[in-house]
Amino acid sequence: MKKQLLATIIGLNITAVAQAATPSLEEMWQVIQQQQSEIAALKQQLRDNDTRLQETEVIAEATISAVEQIAMAPAATSKTTFGGYGELHYNSLDRDDSQASKDEIDFHRFVMFTGHQFSENVRFFSELEVEHSIAGEGKAGEIELEQAYIEWDLAGQHRAKAGLFILPVGIINETHEPNTFYGTERNNVEKNIIPATWWEGGAALNGEISPGLFYDIAVHSGLYLAAGEYKPRDGRQKVGKAKADDMAFTGRLKYTAIPGLEIAASVQVQQDVHQGEGEAIGGTLFETHMAWQRDDFQLRALYAQWDFDSAINNIALGADEQSGFYIEPSYRISEKLGLFARYSEYDNLAGSAVDTAVEQFDIGLNYWLHPNVVFKMDYQNQDTPSKTGYDGFNMGVGYSF
Image (tube, rainbow, N blue to C red):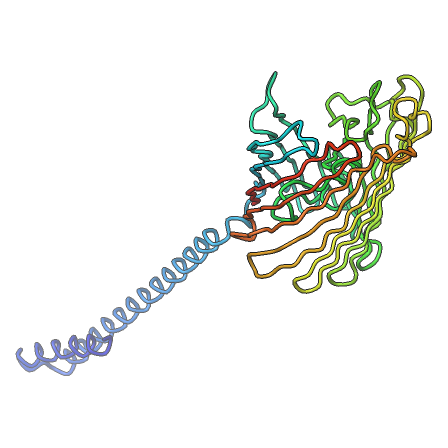
């Protein structure tokens, strides 16, 4: 293109000269010099145009690249995250003595998570829950703040947290989204002995001692058993103006170095579950569990026991020891379908010579519509010495995100 333009200009000038009177040598030299000046100017103009075009192309490419990076990775630039889970339950149960039944549908839990990354080393996490759909005076539900803490990184693989947090005890206490466990309802042992879900306010340290060996240490608010109460579940204060005359201490070791295997043990100690009211009664919780995954087969087993000072027997005979265990094998038939069975036994009056244990056998299935969306159906058979156990079917749907 450039050569054609120059040739055209030169040709036009030569033609013009040829049509005029025959010039002298001096005139010819002036014409040639003028043509050379014009050619040099045109070349410079073309070079300037090329430079500006290249600069424009570079700027345009950089702008497009920056826009694409922002559009394709919004999560990477966001410091605040949201999540949650929920579950709807249907229960159709009859009591062994035929004196009562339970047929109800309940949106058991609606939970929202909020997290924020203040910096590379400092973060916030919270969990707000609505239970049984509606809360208020005379209503079945509650609105509860289950977690709200600040966590920051220390040296190496160690972290600290302060605020409201779930205690490091058991299997489902920390991980209880409905798509992560079998059965419509949470198992009776962790619910009535540990008791899950259990959160307190305080401070904690956690980290990795060696590859696959983790620790947790926490000092926090503890149980408060009011007059006439003896069950750990009744003592949860949920950090609502919680009595703190006597703090509690919790520690855990967890081993995961072998692929597919988790083994853990937790201990909690509290000097006075009456929180300074009346006779002091100390309590110690010991819990250990194992979770093993081999291909499509999974096995979970857990044992938990509370030991209280004998003075608690003045409230309920045998309450100085409260314990339970369960074993749960399961098999994933396909990516979407899994079967399970569970045998559990717990006793809030295990220190008594009288048989007061509650035994339950569950069998059922989970169907995962999506890894985070699950439908559940199971049958339970519950036996108690007083013939007040409930038998029947449970169904549910749950999700997490």
